Image 1 (tube, one colour):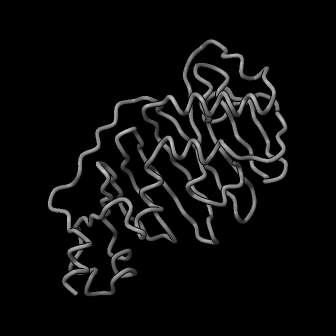
Image 2 (cartoon, one colour):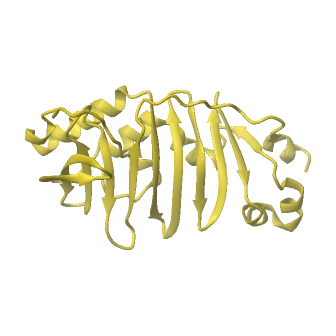
Length: 222
């Protein structure tokens, strides 16, 4: 759960209320279960942070909803915009991103343009999985090692209780007011990072970009 080894295994969140929700008095496993249940019921959230996965630095800033997601990612400092909706993934890369995937000619041809492909396309599947809020919740909170509860504290302005994964070296912070949403997952060290969620259940508008270039048609032309 808390190892941050896979980008798809990350989830954090933020609740809002002035009344305590009682989660801080629960056992560590019960805290994780309550947090997962709250995240499963959420309609939307915002996720941001940075991690290292497979030795590569990754930063993300995504708005996720039950209808898909949108936002920005950067892999090894190669940035791109991302939209996923209706089973289709749309990507608009920086010039450096397009040069990396297709060379100088592709960078010139594709500059400022969106690409699209079915979400299940092998090259896009791992990226599109990042825009599925509930899959992220399940991946982040379903599996873990030995857990220890830590003292209540404040993270990102939110009162939280911590749950430390002793075998995997990470820590989950869960809101102690309002819904017991995950607030942050953090791990120190070379393979670590921090990912946080906030803006739970706020409206998100996800619209596919116009005139996106179909990657499958590009391949057919070669």
